Length: 338
Image 1 (cartoon, one colour):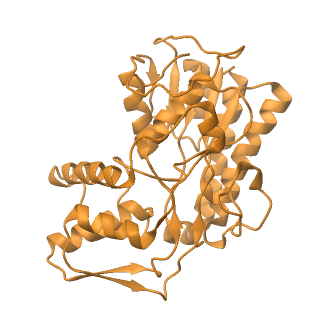
Image 2 (cartoon, rainbow, N blue to C red):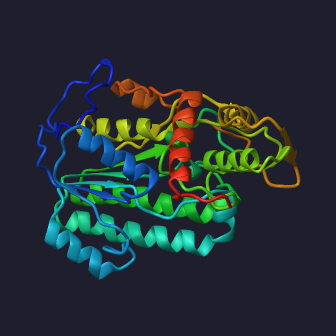
């Protein structure tokens, strides 16, 4: 099923083989989690490509924690392709505070969607894992083979274990039943549609919210958790959607794949970029009594690059686009200053 983004620069393209997917704009495509940041980006680019048979359900319409309702949905709709972007996510505070919710909800949702995808003959599924599945102490850059070779970061261990269970389910169903479930491991993703809250959101939306609030309220200082020294790779969400659709089109292997830029930025540098984009002119102070998390989390994009995919949106441009979307939502009353 060819659903490639039209404007993508022509990379060295892999040869299509036995598992190639022909163009079919009428294919039934289920985007689980379509209202979230990743899911909404997938919907946007799928529609740009002409996909006209998307299966989209809100939580009110389909509670993925309800096994019988998920089974009924798959029986009635029979999706051919699934992008599995649903689940509970959050930053350090949320992961460390709502540990039971994170492991229970994510494992439960994964069990329901993956098993029903197998039972109802889904042709291909893309499952989104997370970089937190890598060991806390891991050689840099992290390669897919490093997974399950060491102890996880304690603050998000329940969420990481849930994601590890999901990728192992994909692997196990592929090996036992011959399904075509592929797992991607995104780095830190940001962009329009992300969740904004100082404590329960990820680092980019949390910083955007903090700096914007300080600017609007005329504050002269923003206090950030930790030391600013931890370094991360940041991926604009449209690039993740692009990579996911690229792999849905062109990849049928069962090897895990990092989706990342391969570029490392410290939290201090990220904060400076966001401060400048937002236009906050006050000071930034760090609170070292708060946790930093793992100091380095850089993934190796070599396998994905070898298939012919490269990211397109740089960090500063991605922050600019994200803040534009934030301002639109804020001005139209869809966000509030917390």
